[in-house]
Length: 282
Image (cartoon, rainbow, N blue to C red):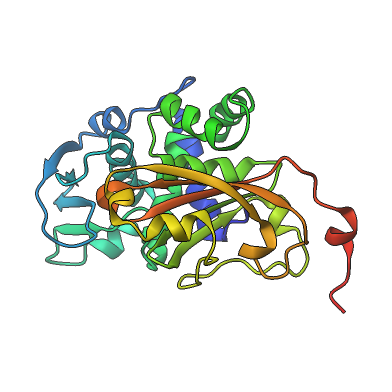
């Protein structure tokens, strides 16, 4: 999973913070980090669609709030970590708090197109699942969606953030897709998929394969609101233009409750054909 320079900076700063604090075990508590910096964390009611957290500044004092409509412990911890990203990442406070502004509303969870929100999301994911602690735990968790579920429990993180972090280090073909209705909101893919010449990543607004387990699951709103799960199998080239033929992927699908979206994880422990990886497009 390739990151931009800004995203790599966020990852580096979060990893550095974990190292400086001498953290050697999972889960990592963002509330403790905030407290040690004198930042009070509280819930706050919000009726603004999509707003998950708040960073407040009065002079040199900061506070963090997370929206009361969030019921998922992992997403609450992600939201607090996202706001810590705004606090720690260079230039964020200067941009978010121009003269006379004391409150910033965040839309965390990889949905915002704002590069600072995206950078804070990467910071949050890394802070809660730093490479040095996450990768050994990941290697011992097995593979596929069951491993992601186990890692989310171990790290006290949301299933979505955990899946994204899993794809970051996966050595097998993995795709993490968040969708709503019949369209894709965003997608992350593992390095083995990124390395396939000619494979075109899914973009926001791309249509789901109509006969996929995800597309069928999304037709029933109660599946999503109830956090239900389903699964099946998909061919990789049904999802991605330019993908090799005959690569079967497990397709695990879970509704994300009040978030109103669906998480799909495509995994395979099949090796990708060398001739597909090395072939020319011409």
